[in-house]
Amino acid sequence: MNWAAGCVLQRAREWTIGAHRATGQQQRQRQRQRQQLQQQQQQQQQQQQQQQQQQQQQQQQQQQKKNKEQQQKTNKEQQHWLQSQRHHNCSLRSTRHQQPATPEQPLAAAPFNISTPTPPS
Image 1 (cartoon, rainbow, N blue to C red):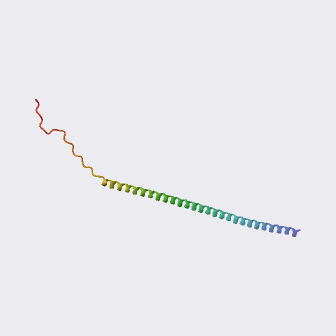
Image 2 (image 1 turned 90 degrees about the vertical axis):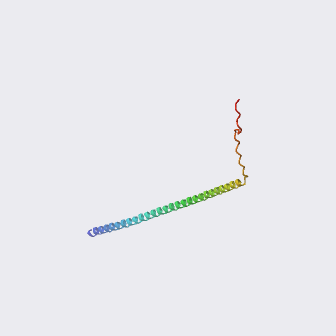
């Protein structure tokens, strides 16, 4: 009996130690799984941030391209307007030179009589 009781106690101890070992392994495995999950989440966040940055860069590049195109269009319009003004001014100058000079009008005659007045009677 004594031997049997000791054997049962020994087996109980071994089982308890084994159970502790198993729970320790399970805890370590869970810890590894948590770490892997955290790493995956961090990687996903980094990828999302990179994608957002790329989208922002693309939007900025598109906006810069639009701005540049608009500036070029405005410059062309301004150049065209300036050229038309120059052409208009040149044509005005040339028509001024081509017009015959109008003779100056002679001064109007004075409205008074130069002869001596007649005395009253």
